[in-house]
Length: 225
Image 1 (cartoon, one colour):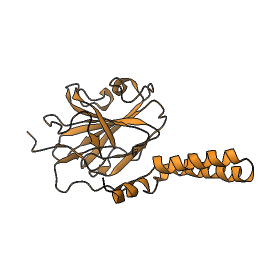
Image 2: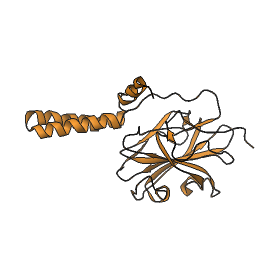
Image 3: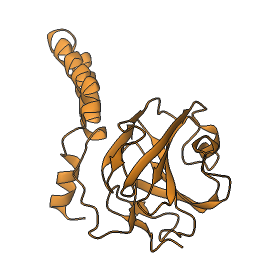
């Protein structure tokens, strides 16, 4: 990545969801400036961390139809065949799943993987295990979305809380039309995002690859059977 691209990523403006934390840190820094130096530095460090964590860079999805793009920045920790979350009602037949782990230094804004319509959103409480573990998909707190493609096929994307994540935000609702690369949610402070592809569609990525949300192509849909 070029230095200019790196600077644009680091200095990207924060998502509005981060404003309460940023303003809170700034307020602590101001109080510290008037009272104790250690409080000023603590507030300043927290503000800087929040500005970095909540950064929300613009992303450009690949041109042309039929691309499934990464729903999040991060590292692919699992590629395999699994049934989607039962609460979405998409059946129990295994389909390809790509799991992306987001560390605290990754951009945490989630993006829609395809153009389609949100048909169902289901939240389920759970544990807060390390999100890089495979069992986090089943045991951790999660928010699952089912998306219908224009050709009638369906897929799912699941926001999963991690070891220190304690808040999953979702900005869409059932019935909303979404486009590939569009922002749909955010998970605060470390997390994981799982993507369940339509039946018959295979992933083009492997474990260990780094994803760029809204830009990296995970699969190509092709024609419906």
